[in-house]
Image (tube, rainbow, N blue to C red):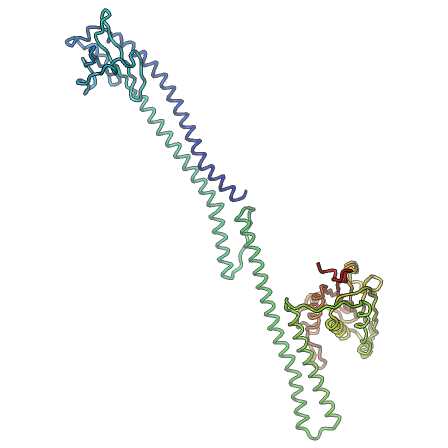
Length: 489
């Protein structure tokens, strides 16, 4: 139940239920009183008959007559007053009424009528002697028992009403505390713990407003934690990258300095040695330039605001161009190259960056291929253009309706399953030995490749098996008839 509805229902119960209980108690007391009134009325009527027989005697209304019979009737419950025809008191059992007289209107009002009041029953009747009015008698029968019962019942009713009201109030307070205060306090504690940087233990939530608030807070905390972890990871990657690049730059700089000093100081160097020294300096300089260029590209591609400038090109002509030119590199290692493109239609690409992708993938493939092995570089827009992929590559996941695939596959050392998820990390290299005799690159190649393909709206997948080889599949969105890639809305 929503919190708003629950609160409205609680308020309604607090307001209505006490009124209902009070009405029931009042009706019960009123019913009891009515029953008591009927019983008392008949009992008083019977008692009054005996009194009337005495008070109707005319001789009692002479001032000097004997009033002993009247005194015998008197009690704490019964009081009697006698009046002469003019309304003056002849006799009364009630102190303080001896000087009181009745007016004409009062004297003749409610005669022969048993009146039921809160304090007592009253009865007044004239007395005649041979058709002559000689006086009145006034009788009061106190209702002490009734008043006592009414008071006790009223006290009981008030106690029950107060008890039920307190019970309802405390029940509602307890429910409000459990449904509101406890949960809000728990949420505030979670917020305080989260603000202090400590982990919070998420609790089960309801579907009311506070539960929704808790869910939003937990979702926000998860997003903040994920963002913090991402920032921390990026910071660690940057620190690692700076440290690695600093280390990698230090080695060629040391070599360049050493060879340059030798060229300057050593006068007895032969012409061939001088050429070799110059060649080493140029190679080290090219390596440093490549490293800095990769670092700049990697940093630029990481920016969310950076977008590649894409142009529409003929797919078959473009991919036929970028897969060519790698035969000399493969011949140096006796690798048999299989390069072909079977692509139709047009595609939007950044030619310079796609050539960088091809260079990165081919340099890695050649580097880790066995001598006298086979290497494939293929662009295909259908199953017909695919080479014989390794058995561990799932061809069923290739979506040729949406993508053109640029594939590089080599036979070589492969990548272990534990390292397969790390190949796109910046500065990661499968060959951790990083022999400086044969420079292995900056470690940013695959990371840059992934970012370039993703900037094109595609994705990259790597499948590998140790001592078998590696397959890298780059999916690039096909261009729709309207001129936009399939991945664009």
